[in-house]
Image (cartoon, rainbow over all chains, first blue to last red; front, side):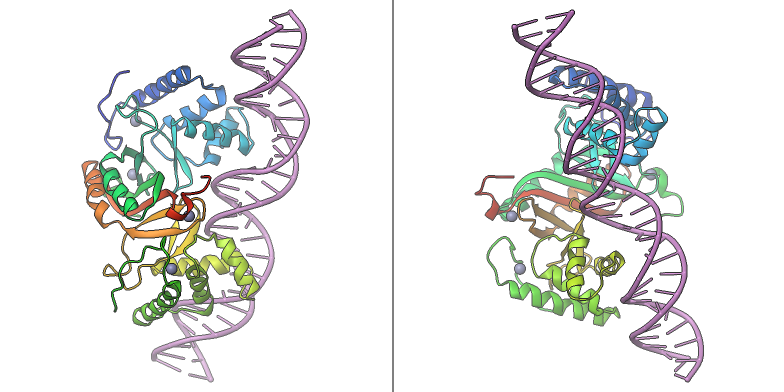
Length: 168
Length: 168
DNA sequence: TCCATATTGTTATCTTATAACATATCACTT
DNA sequence: AAGTGATATGTTATAAGATAACAATATGGA
Ligand SMILES: [Zn+2]
Ligand SMILES: [Zn+2]
Ligand SMILES: [Zn+2]
Ligand SMILES: [Zn+2]
């Protein structure tokens, strides 16, 4: 599994590699884990991989509908549940939206704890690791006797490209 | 403004002080800021201060209704908007719920950046400062050229009291 | 008192998400 | 190849969370 250098998605980059790499990784993961990347699931992942923008479930559903792949909410929510559980997609709590994981072949692999940087203007989402922050977080929790099961860390602001303009 | 020692709300404590202190602080804040703590707003804050549990907007609305203070969603959402904006209440993104700020007279004062520890079992929410974590977070953002406007940091897990049982 | 502003009341609607159950598909055994 | 249990999808209905829009009222200063 080739370890790619971490891409800063806010910079110009070969996005076709994000898309292809993401799909390849997903197929490989499902292969090894005995999971089924069915047509709807694959298409939802593909839709999310087509940009680094957060999409709402109903945005995705509208596209599925155009593709003739279903128009009822459970279709998209079930696919998203599968993708989130297998770590291929992340849910953004602040936006009630979803974005494809873009840690392809990262050393950390799936199941990492991500931190998100969410641009309020263009809805692009960058994903970085919580590794560096995790230590101090854990210390706070320990001080209160709290047992951490999962973490939500989302930074809201403006990406480099959106900083020039009028501002939100 | 008396600086109280930070309370660990997961430990047994004199909760009446949380309630009274919270209301007193709110009145003082509104006084100095020229804000109006109207009956509905005060009641919503009081409802939230009565426990350290996160409450959904409709939970609060049901109580307001019993009090004869309104039964339409905008009533509670408008009060919550006011309270969140003035820093008296925080919104928990992971839960789509709200909890009173319990940093009464803290050195940091209002407008601090909070981090939350949310018990999935009893829905109690402890609030600590993001201060210690903020540095490393900011560094990640700077590395990507991202301009941070606000932060969502929520730790999901189990409080000390809920750790004994069967587990969620 | 009169006015501008802020707040509340009310109706309707929108967005996000899930429950429940019928049908179809898959993977595996016989 | 046919049977079988588990998994996945189709479909209807509804729950849960949030806001738009406008009318009515209260507040506080000129
Ligand atoms: Zn890309
Ligand atoms: Zn942007
Ligand atoms: Zn208390
Ligand atoms: Zn608890």
